[in-house]
Image (cartoon, rainbow, N blue to C red; front, top):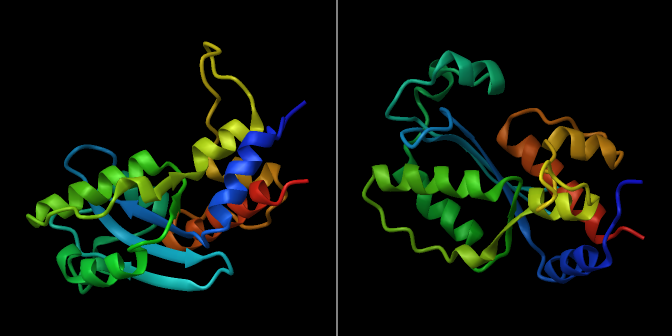
Length: 189
């Protein structure tokens, strides 16, 4: 029966919780090595929005991506570019543990966007943690080949834990859902 709620996973989440982490989500133009971030949202454990911004990309937003997150080129036309929001975003994240649902993806896209402006990435990646991987270990279902845990979509994970927030595919909303999912794991009895 799932979740298995492995005590080591819960203990790890409790340790991170003690550091008052924040949670970030991004929306992007796509998944490729050429895609960029077009929206960022950061929230704290209480659900307060610490940072939120559209970001004007240097490339058009493909219709397939707009279908997912409903962000159009018109919506970001007057938004700041990445290099203009970076200092403020970095100051929100600096020295904090930062949770992401699929950190490998969000970090990669943030770094890709960063490099488009010839900026040096100075953030320490060890402060970023993946709530998707944490939830997969918490849930305990093995993957197809039995070598690792099966990943779950954010919406499915939230629903399985009885969290009433939808996976809206908007940055702040999904950061809120990620924070609630993390708290659920850390406070699981």
